[in-house]
Length: 174
Image (cartoon, rainbow, N blue to C red; front, side):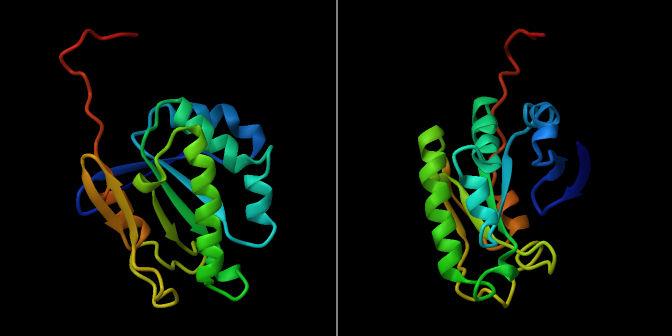
């Protein structure tokens, strides 16, 4: 896996990139077990999303692994919004959000506490700043018992993450 570090307005962030290919599942487990939040990137392209969310798809497997490994906070980046029909389709984003929400709820995540952000990594839409190409998107709202959060772009969604409480007063276990 690869590491990238950057700062948001609230946090120092280390991204542990765990590739989606089946050959890299061991790497994904190594990276995910250290994470405070998982960022699940799903492709919005016709056929790509359906393959990932299918019964044996990587999207399902990665979400399940993240939850099983104890990563309780999740952000979903709906990528390749530039390749939807029509480009930057609100209907396609909502369809994907609904289907992913249904699945992540089954494995234990609360979809209301998950920020869904439509992005285009290729064009940089909604990555570091709000894109004018998706005026319909008002922000990925997050509701949880600790309070609300929201992200109008991916970097803002990172700022809505809550650092997990760590039992620093307990014995060290190895």
